[in-house]
Amino acid sequence: MESSCDVIVIGAGLGGLRAARDLADQGHSVVVLEARDRVGGRGRTSHLDGRLVELGGSWFTPEHVQVKAELERYGQATRDFPTQLHARWRTAGELRRGLPVPWHELPSLERALVQVAADAAAYTAGTFTGADRSALEYIDALEPTPGVRDFLLGWWQLMGGAPPASGSVVDAIGPIASHDGLSGLVTCLAHGPAGGWSALAEALAADGISVELDAPVTAVHIADTATCTTADGRTWHARAVVIAVPVNCLPAITCTPGWPQPVAEAAGANAGAALKVLMLVRGIEPHGIAVGVGHGLHWWYADDAVDDVVRVTGFGWTTADFDPASRTDVERALHAFFPEGELLEFTHHDWVGDRHSLGTWLTAPAGRADLVNPARFAPFACAAFAGSDVAHEEAGWFEGALVSGAAAAAQIHTLLLG
Image 1 (cartoon, rainbow, N blue to C red):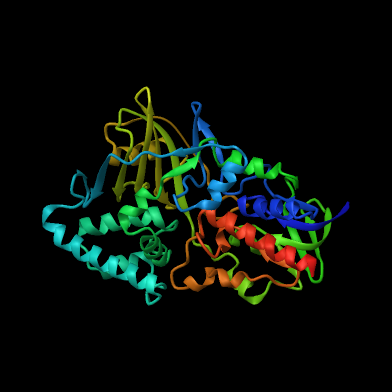
Image 2 (cartoon, rainbow, N blue to C red; image 1 turned 45 degrees about the horizontal axis):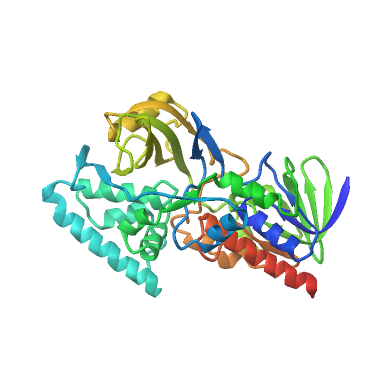
């Protein structure tokens, strides 16, 4: 089978859908080719005992105006997350409330936070020179005491989606700079779609565009026009193409005459390898966080309660010592931070093993942070890139996906008019 249209969009995440919708609004015929059996990419809403949980990305910040605009366009409500009322810490092998480290380690904590603040200011000024260090190298260079080290590793989990030895510290320093310190990283987790990210993706997909599901693109020829071939042998011809797949999926698409060298070097470079487990837990306080080094999960968010059952999110990074599908492992991780909690139900999605993502949110690799510089993904021939991995702002967030999709649509529209 062969089909033709003005623009092919490869990938039905929020970036690809935004590009397709905008191009359709401008009068172009658009077909979206999506490898999965659903739209939404790394946004995927599920339910536990009837309560909504997000297997992929969860929050958006007060500054994310594109997300707000899309929710308003489709008449979808925003959920405002309440202020966190309490915190607990697991540092130096002990569970603590109040101070995150023992009294005698407070000078070490102060020195570390002063240095982190100085480096964040240098990042804002464009003078930070430590981007190629791993998060672990950066933390150990601060010469922290044991409790302070655990405290900092726990906070890395919130910002970097990779084991601390493989992710660049720039993915901690950058967010600290843009959100006014460690405390801002919590207060920025302020909003979410009340109906879930999947509902927003489905609304975009239904807005004047054609989406082909179960249509993984295996080859693309990009010159004056574009031709895409899907795994089932179908061929699609178009005047232009938007590539909106995770960068770790680019090696699975054969491009002729070849990806531009900067893109080829970056293909597969996202170090994101986070774990996210969603739970229903009885007997713990709602509306709090827990941070430190535990057993597989190191940053926790206790959400709201219904009949003494709290929605809980636990974040970790991939390790051979923790299986997010194992009740035994999940209970052990939970009880390291919430020994009073009773695990009722839990779920997760393996984004690293998922062949249509091969990783989690964008995290620069230690030693080669330049590989995920969005400047690598400039338009070429009749092609443009979109998606949160290549966003010039708010990379790794759904806001970045939407911004990049709008930019790709504008680039392709200009090309087609020319």
